[in-house]
Amino acid sequence: MANFAYLFERFPSFGQTFCYREVAELDRQGITPPIFSIRNPKDERPQDWDARIVERVHYLPGEEQLLREVHRASKKGKLAAEIIGALDKWDRRTDFLRLYQAVYVGLRLREMGIRHVHAHFAGMAARGAFWIARFFPVTFSFTAHANDIFAPRNFEIGLDKLVDAARIIVTVTDYAARFLRERFPNRADCIYRVYNGLNLAEFGRTDFSSTPPLIVAVGRLIAKKGFADLIRACGLLAEGGKALQCEIIGEGPLENELRAQIEQLDLQNRAALSGAKPQREVRQRFAAASVFVLPSVVDPEGGIDNLPTVIMEAMATGLPVISTNIGGIPEMVVENETGFLVQPGDAAALAGAIEKLINDRPLAQRLGQAGYSRAQRLFSIEKNVRELCALINTARRD
Image (cartoon, rainbow, N blue to C red; front, side, top):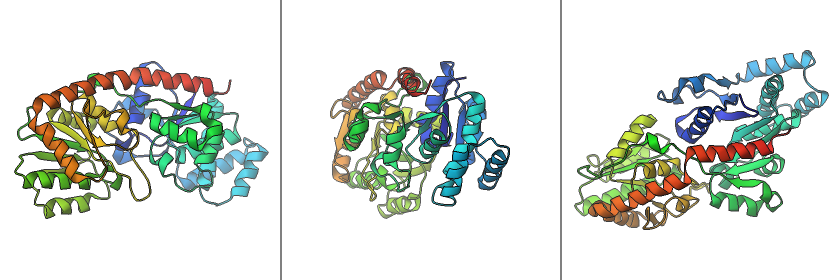
């Protein structure tokens, strides 16, 4: 057990391996906070994750059952008058379910004697935690990541109110911490950076033996990942007669568009979209690769990558990384030390960086080894989870 609980929008899911790793490491350290998930990811549950952890997740009911349970609790006198008043006043305004979910979770936290809740992302879960703190003697904190900071959606309980009400705000890069401190100077002392982490022992090491060289990319098939630039870069390399294979692992709304681009550039035998894969298979593809590429860009809504976990994973495999100089990426990828950074959207520069590494195996090995060493220093899951846990312990209400 633990003296705090987690609240997630969905847990576990392919797209948020860092959340699962955090919970799993706490479990390894003997800390087992209750886990509440607003949504049940069902088809997103990776099969190679610990069933004991997944079985601990308490999934919130759907709207009809949720409302029934809250109304039943009200009739039984379990809700304070101010809670009932807030529910009545909010009525069916936007995001009204967050209030009911807060009551549902808050009642269970009260039964457990837990007085602090931590959420991931300054989104649905954090808004639920905000209302829990309003309704119950419970404090809250949250970890903010990327779009929830740089391109937040417009809700009445927005990023400003979340930052103002939380005991602490954690984010995962120095870049994001500076961004938040500059935007919310009166809360600067409550904003902390804790890197996501991983267990480097889980990752095999590449031997750079793939023939032709294998370029691997991993991520959601969405605009900010910049995979269209990678495909263009592969087209330029193919025009120059370079032998290579490119594999993009992930799924998302741009799949058809990217497939059409591959066909248009006649890259069907050189570039593949292989869909989402379990972590075990992703690690295997890393170990078979020659270089990892994530050509992140700023999307039309202003969203950017902050600390892409896949870059850490590539570094843990000893792969050199090619990415772009936006968000917190330069905190991982050091130019000409652990990889190369290019300007977002510059497919020609991307092609040049790829060509440099696949032409020079000793250089690729040197950069990959430096990346592995940097990952050991910065991204130890054991150290970073202990740091997060210490912050949460200082934030919770005694």
